[in-house]
Image 1 (tube, rainbow, N blue to C red):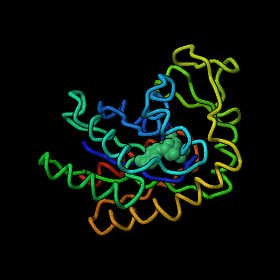
Image 2 (cartoon, rainbow, N blue to C red):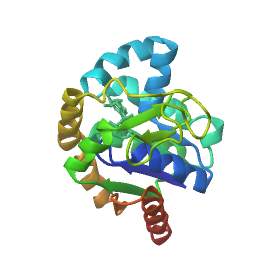
Image 3 (cartoon, rainbow, N blue to C red):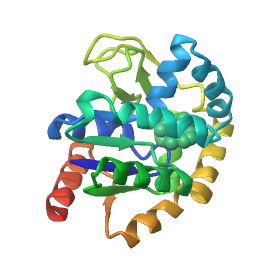
Length: 217
Ligand code: ADP
């Protein structure tokens, strides 16, 4: 299956993508995680991306699209993939369509995670990520790790993202409304959108997403 996950920052895309990818046995491709890995390794791409990310702005398309394509061309993605955080504007959505057409493949569905804005802010403020980069995401109240500061799944150290500050979050929400929301209509016209209410328990949301994918196919 080839799936795209969209939704505002803090909607739970990373958490859901991790669980869905595991259930569907496809790789979870997160452009945010790829950027963070590059920042951690100090690559030129990471150095360029960091200033945009910390400000809550989008990393330029030239950089992002190339990175996403390279990742989709890796062997483990040959049978399908779940895209999380890409595409994030119309230019990227069109570039993705061109890429898929070149490869002779199609998307199976686009899941739109819907969450009220005040909840988004609460989720982001309490969010903690695992340093080991396995897509493990926690929340100090909603999904607290058994031991504070330690990942339940792999024992890695948990940290707060540098773009989870109030100011950066405000910009990210604005960027989401102006740049990312238009891709929902773009995919609706292609008949690919399934809207998933993303309030409630993590597992319940995953279940809703799986049901929606079954109905699509
Ligand atoms: P969230 O969905 O919570 O905002 P992500 O980890 O998906 O978190 O993204 C974090 C940041 O990484 C974004 O604010 C942006 O700066 C950058 N980024 C991620 N994906 C893209 C993309 N497709 N295009 C441009 N920038 C991106």
